[in-house]
Length: 133
Image (cartoon, rainbow, N blue to C red; front, side, top):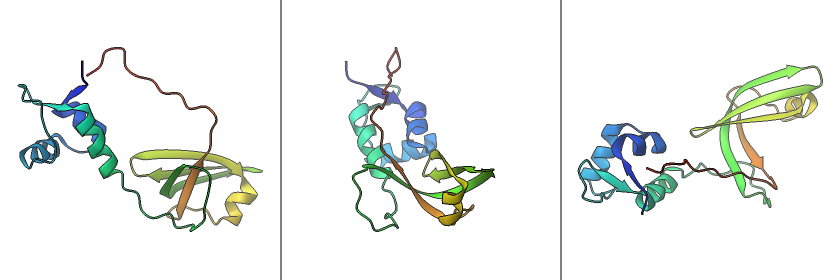
């Protein structure tokens, strides 16, 4: 059974309004299965999500083996003794990094600063809902 999504869940997944999804359907940007109420094929929704996630260029200009790099803006820096917590907003995602206070200060991290979160992990957990759709 192929994955399909109704308008409201599709809008939440894409981070847009229900009306935007309806406009994209009317404009032919998102196809539907022809069912009533409207259902969007999961593959088409995934392709639209990828297209919307076009990130800004990486400002560091460096090469890296890390494939999970997120360009964002620093929203908060909390320094407590020798450690710092740095929050970045990377598109719709909040990324939190714990680092030394010295590193945060050397990088000039402060709210409003442009930064790149680089994640290199040996374990990534992927979960799905018990009931799809």
